[in-house]
Length: 448
Image 1 (cartoon, rainbow, N blue to C red):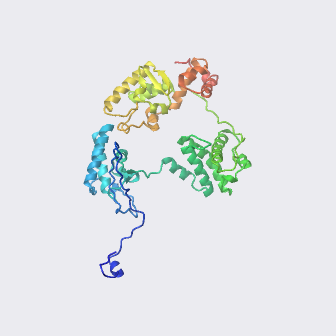
Image 2: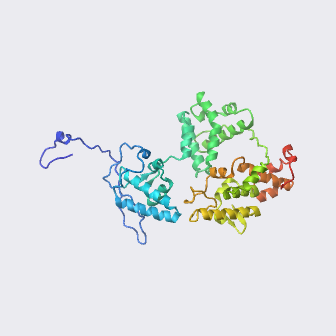
Image 3: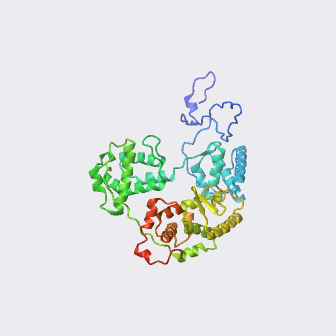
């Protein structure tokens, strides 16, 4: 507001052309820089916002696909853009990116800097995702921004978003209780009773198995899990079979965690018996499809199927294999040393030749690559393993076929199966007790 020296405050004149509205506490505050300690180099930062910069009041989601790559504004700070491009090329050289990925990354960075509402501020990860609309790589831009200290992670993890969608519609109190269970299952607990974090698959299954019962309770007037007693548990459980076992396991998981966190006063699932899950009959795989996959002209498919068919590796073990895990004709995996079969060695050699020819400059330490992971250090995904195996086969069926064959060849020696495949006693016993099944007694001898 303007006030001339020696003159009274003119409110009408001050409001003639409008005023700028400011909200307190929204400006970026830069801390007073402290001198670095001796023998200590301060970390470089490219953040260039000042205390006078104002945050955006009404952010909008940009649609770059409607504009295309041409016609977008240039970065207002050429020095910052040049520094970020230099860092991008240095990072690309360290990671072995192709020239195309490097140039697309620099182009994406220029576009994002030109579209910033507050030049010099950190870029949000959700804003970077808009580059997909003009076919520019998002993952490489995120890596460069994180390396430069210019990335603000504001994306919601997929598991959190799934949890919010799944429990929608439940009473508020029950939702808060389930959120407490979800936090412990996802992150673990460092205070007694201590608990390790569970995998996302386990979290999803336990909630999915419990959700039908939770919704029935909510529809009948229960707003909190504190209102549930042993009688309600027994009435809600299915009579028998897998539905009873799964619902019981999910409910026990929820009530046990909430009781341990003192969210509930008691655990009504204690001493409630539920039946065990019914195990599927173990059957051999289709040998015709298996032979075709092992003898495939695709080096990756032949090696993946051979590792499962000869050594019963799981998909997660295959994804985690590193180049240094295979040496001297042996596979070093999770403390085990596996002597590779001759057919596996041949296919491993063929795949390594293909890998070195296809991605000669890749710095990814994992054994298996595809075009999306060749310029990064992450493993291939579960979907890649499934697609590589091919149609008509699954990793589970191939692995079960191999272990069944070994059990038949050793007349049900559980100790041999434990030592050879790294199984537990319970898992090995499942194979040895199925040898007398009618579907297995009429098979040809093991190894054929």
